Length: 237
Image (cartoon, rainbow, N blue to C red; front, top):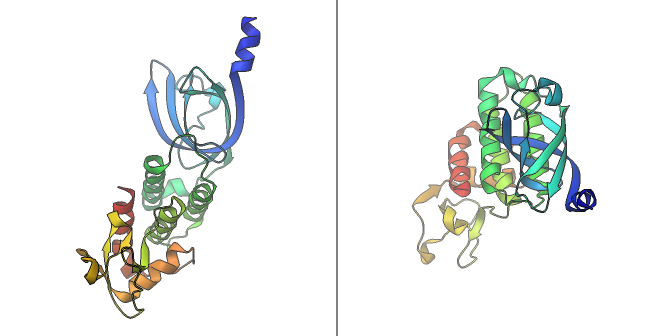
């Protein structure tokens, strides 16, 4: 009877996943925060992961896309990691500090923003694609450009996209040649009639960021990156 009840109470999931946090637990275990393709953000216990190379083979690292088998019990907040293997290795990414920092920053945004156990397919696709592009960058590529563009798209995917086309209060459009005042906490532009905002963005980068948020590759210029990344950081905070 006890065995039958255990089977009923356990549900097994197989999904692609990214490790977004690792915390040592006890003498040999790991508690993992995972962003998964089919389940969203979940936490899982990997028993013996720090001692048994045979069981997980050292694959529980960020940046690689993993294939995982997870057991979910109704009586526990933590899932149990039963099996993990690397589906998409990203070894080139690991050789560049700039690319690793960009990847880590994006993983941090998703870790903080993703609600528990809520699938976010658009976020998954954007994050997985960013890691693939960072892994493929040559020396001339800009990891910060990729990060800024994806950051704007991730805000939109989470439903926090910044409206840089019209006032978020009254809906008045901002003419293409005009700069705009941005209040990130309110979700975008605020015109002077509605009180304005302290953060000002010039017309040309504003229009390029609109295109970047819509997913247009190469929309941002190098001169846009500091402003774009600042807006993204404010958005995720």
